[in-house]
Image (cartoon, rainbow, N blue to C red; front, side):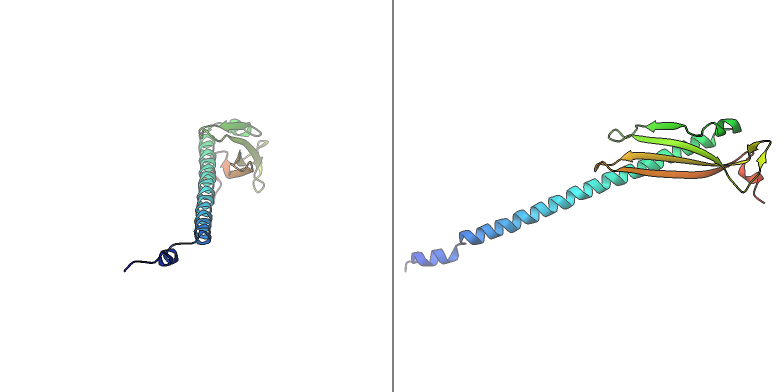
Length: 146
């Protein structure tokens, strides 16, 4: 018994079915690619944010090593640049201010609030900022805590 040609046609896919299936496949692949691209962008931004925190911590540790009080007072308004991450430049500034609850000692404040701020640009060309603030005492913080 021979197969008739009409039964073969009934088992095949039509052109419309193939086009619809191809469209669904292309949509799924484009969506997956878009999600992956967004994920890589997010990871890059998190990496830069983590690096900014490291820059702040490094700079704060450098400031903590200062033993001469007038050198700490002279830091107000200074700037610095960190280029350790090749694709991103971190620009920072240091500001100091007298901490209000404490009186001055011989015309110079005895407690200073030091704030370090870092700015950088992410891949979307948005400028981001991170900052760190700490208190410094003239003869060490343990002298002024009761």
